[in-house]
Length: 224
Ligand code: DX5
Ligand code: ZN
Picture (tube, helix red, strand yellow):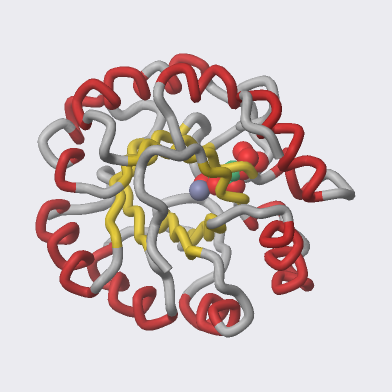
């Protein structure tokens, strides 16, 4: 399982708003809807004011899902824990530029460990901070909410960074966008050049997860 090559638009359901007591079923439901990846939000209560799941839970999910595991580490000291996440079975690791002392070294380490690497920037972080390392990554993740919680309101100004990043990285690197993506905001971020849409609340707050995914696909012009 690898991050899909750039050139397709992918929806990556975020499990943050899923029923955590039935995680395997929730992941199976989005897999049935035909998504290729699932977005795993890892929070440490330190880098962000919330705590979610870590390697032990991910290792169990790995046994029941064939989806690409796109892990989003909202943690301090990501380099210290990267290997644990790889051992648990994630296929991709995105870490925050605001949390990493030596981002280039960590990208190299992730590639050596056999996973793809992503760099993430918070809404208030300027594009300049990732300019030199973005081209070394497989994916750049643009936050359009302050990280920590699902179901927040999309920040339009933060989304505008997508177009600038697309110019820097060209067509071969994925640009993922995370926070407040639904059928209204998905077409906007796709028009800026995003190709990987993290969607939490707009899928898992709806009784029919597959129908919710198809509504978003139709909004940006992909037939279900
Ligand atoms: C926020 C997380 C997101 C979030 C997205 O800190 O990184 O992945 O769960 O959820 P929605 O789509 O509800 O904004
Ligand atoms: Zn996320």
